Length: 87
Image (cartoon, rainbow, N blue to C red; front, side, top):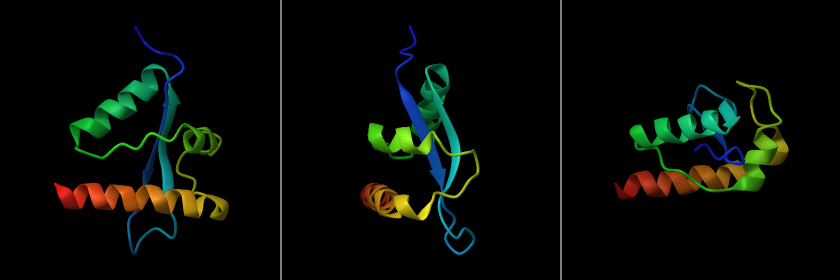
């Protein structure tokens, strides 16, 4: 059974290429489950932040995050960096 309330968003940031992180996937229900499954398959750390996902879901795909989200996303990127350095 799919939980239709589940939501997910994925960001991509290529240092030196992107000026800011970009939203590369978003969705709810089955789409969110697939986003999470792909992240797990690739050992991408997951961070549960429903409020940030709500805001990110208002962006268009491949849109750079707006400056007012830099701080929140920087915290996520720091989390990912810490998690990947532990592996």
